[in-house]
Length: 246
Image 1 (cartoon, rainbow, N blue to C red):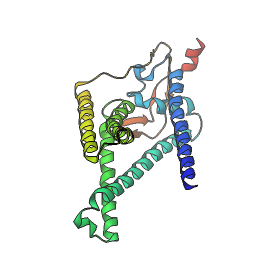
Image 2: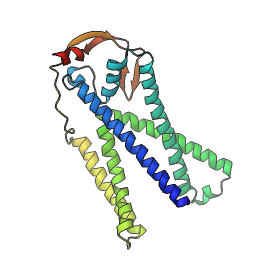
Image 3: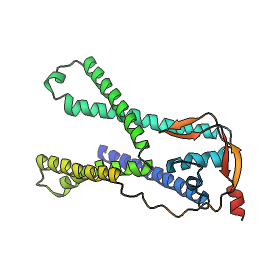
Image 4: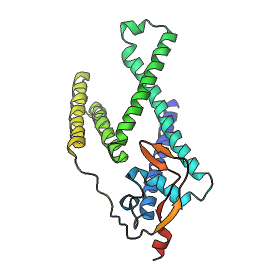
């Protein structure tokens, strides 16, 4: 009974994850359909491709009171919740799998161990913020994150596949394969960032449908990953309604 419950929970989680990713990709399709004849990046309305979704919210939904603020709150809430859970999980993982096995840390009392875990969580959070700032300066964030995640998850998937398909595999061979694969992936990723491997292929876009229209955007200035999304300025924005009517 308990095993069946775990299977149901796993399927429930997978369905929710699939729905979430479908919504992610659907939002990208909506942005592409909206700006297919007026690329905000090529027209100079935004400076990075990652700003397209906030720009879409401001451009199309700013007439609804409070919606822009709700969008910003959702973005920041998602980021902060992810960073906090990531920091706590990594701190507990380091403590249980590495530090707790050492003679010095194994003799610590529960209050002292709690303080060590809190310190590890703080250090992990600081490192995550620093890495976030670095990733924000490397270009398209979605592309960069996919490369880094592939570099880490590829060797891990190899370990799981070898454990399922190769029964003679031992832990020494698994560790050698893990670190060897990670070194090769890291070499490829770092080389791509240093030498430049070309940006991912983009769908065709144009600016022939852009009709300048002076409007005032939102206040105050909100910056995320070194990119300003909302600012109280009078700027040129595309009038896509006129463009579509033509």
